[in-house]
Amino acid sequence: GGPQDAAAAMAAEGTFDPLRGVSVVVLGACHSLEAGHAFVAAGCRHVVAIASEAKVLDDDAALFARQFLFSLFQGQSVREAFERAKGAIASSASPRFSAGADFRAAESAKFVLLPEADAHDDCPMAELPAGDLMELNPLPAAEPPTMPAPFVGRALELQALVRTLRRRRPAEVRLLTLWGSRGMGKTALAKAVAQHLWQRRFYDDGVAFVELAGVRSEASALAALSEALDMEFARWKDVSRALQRWQGLVVLDGADELIAAAPSVMERAITSLMHASQLQCIVTAVRPLSSAIGGGGVPVEHPVQVGPLSRRDAARLFHALVADALPPGLRGAANLGALEQHGLLVQLSGVPRRVLQMVPLVRQGHSLEDLATELRVRGPEEEEEEEGD
Image (cartoon, rainbow, N blue to C red; front, side, top):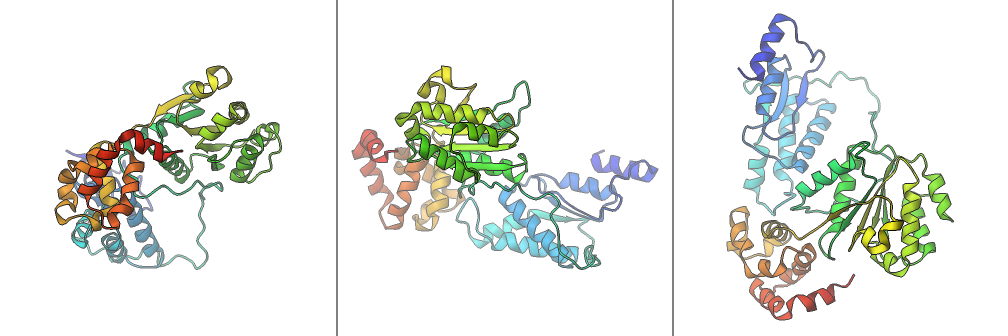
């Protein structure tokens, strides 16, 4: 039999009681219905799971859990909390597509309350004593910028980078460089990685996001680092000393101007940060540091190239941003294939910045055909020159 049969057998024998005192379980993972039945078989009275063969977005799972638990702590029954959480999904905007009400209602229906035949009219939190709720595991103080929305097409790269940064000695990676041509979305990917690790409390002290765009000197580099970390650094020695016990992630975003103007300053910044033994660092730049500065002055670097999106993912991103302004035949998930093959998407070549540059033009009423023709006439060289830094 399945896991629920094994759990029921052990419960009947009195050899399996890991859920003593647990009456509500929320499983936000895709395809978790079978696991939900296993919790029911083990004696849990109320289990939320995701229907078999159904996938849910992380944002929807998080939204459901927040609303469901908030409602429970307000004293509502499990059934009331469940229906309110489903309603929150149905009425919210899709994080991926400009979807209609029917699509969002179908997404909310993927959440299942087990056992399905029960009324679930218990109010498990109604008898809690009055008082303020306390978070026992608060988020770290240093918070990175929010993840860009919509964030499309980089899920596999995000997970690979997270796994890389979570390696332990002797395979530990302390300096990771996201490199690639301008406009590929290196900053967005760095923000996504930082947010992912911060939300999961991977770093005790959090994440410092250092904006290096426009930074071209030692004084301005120290000032940018001071602002991001909320500390005062007059010299590079101050950085190493202050961060010696700091357990966190520092993101140096857009390092190209500093590398071009003062490569020795960039080298000292990296060296000073790496002297703090519990710190990890992500750098975004056009080239790996070992190539841009010279391998001799850079600590062991793990370079990762960020390339263009696939045309399907570029179409998904474009659709998420301008679906309501598209011709009817190109709207909706069912028409993504047609959008993907459109001449404009071909000309955009999967470069996220180019996709974003088209959004205001489409909303101003320019046709996709005219924009595709204009890009074809201009050519890639002229476009690259206009992109700048």
